[in-house]
Image (cartoon, rainbow, N blue to C red):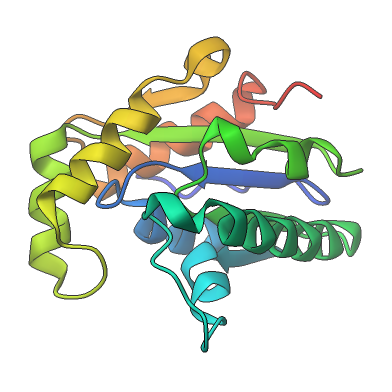
Length: 182
C-alpha cells in the first residue's frame, strides 16, 4: 500500500471494536503515517493505571469505574488535539461512552471495527495477553455489533490483511463519513 499522508491536525479518531479486532495494530500504523503529528492513546493503559481497586472493564460491575476512565481518556485526547495532533484513541468504546467525547471542542470521528467473531476470539487467544475468555470476547463483540443509530460508523474488516484494513481506515477517515454527531 502506498503510504498516504494523513492531515487531521486537531482531530480525534476513536478506533473502537471488540477485543481482537486489530485496533491497536491499526492505531500504531496510523500514528506512524506521514502528515500531521499524531498521538496514540491506548485505552487499556488508562484502565491499567488503576492499581488498588481495579475491576476488569468487561465486568458489569465495572461500569461506573469505566466511566471515570473514559472521562480521563477523553480529557487527554482533547489536550493532544488542542495541541494540534491527530489523536487516535484505541479501545473498546461503545456508543454508551460517547457522551464524554461529544462534549469535546475537537472534531471527533468514531469508527468501529467489526471482525468476524471467530477471528476476534482466535486473535485474542493467539496474542498471549489481555482478554482471552471466549465468552467475554463474544459478549463484547455482540455489544459492538449493535450500534443502533451509529451503525453507519461500523467498518467490517472480514479477513482483511493489516494493510487492507489500514487502507480502509484511512479512506474512512478521509471521507468524513465517520464524524461523530454532537
